[in-house]
Amino acid sequence: SAPLEEQQMLHEKLREEIHTIERQYEEELEAMREKLNQERRDREHLTLQMRALLQEKSEWDNTIDCLQSALDKSLAEYDNMQRLLEDTEGRLHETDKTLADERAAHHECRSTLEGVQERLRGEADLR
Image 1 (cartoon, rainbow, N blue to C red):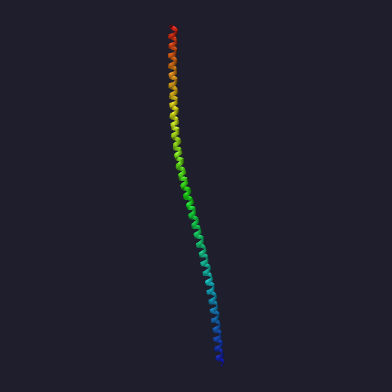
Image 2: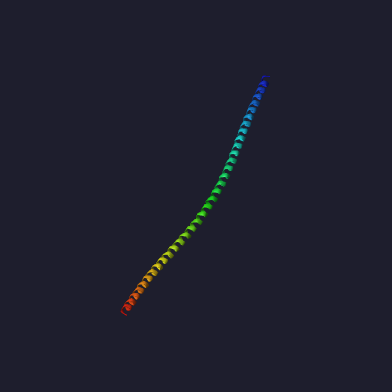
């Protein structure tokens, strides 16, 4: 009967060890599930953050495109105004030259007229 008791004790001991191993396995399995769930939540969180950042980047890209377009338009308008200013300065220079030529011609006419008047007075005085 002693070997039977030993066998039963050994059997009971093995059953307890199996039960302990099964419990440890379940605990490790639950810990692994929790870890995987946390990793999934972290990945989802990172995915949402990445989408938000990509959306923000897209909005900044659009803003930069709008600003670049406005800058290009402004530069084109500035170049046009610069050309108009140069054209106006050129016409002003031509007008100043024409005015100076007109003044010179006016002075020449006046001198000629004064000369004619002097001669006429001289002839009138002789009569």
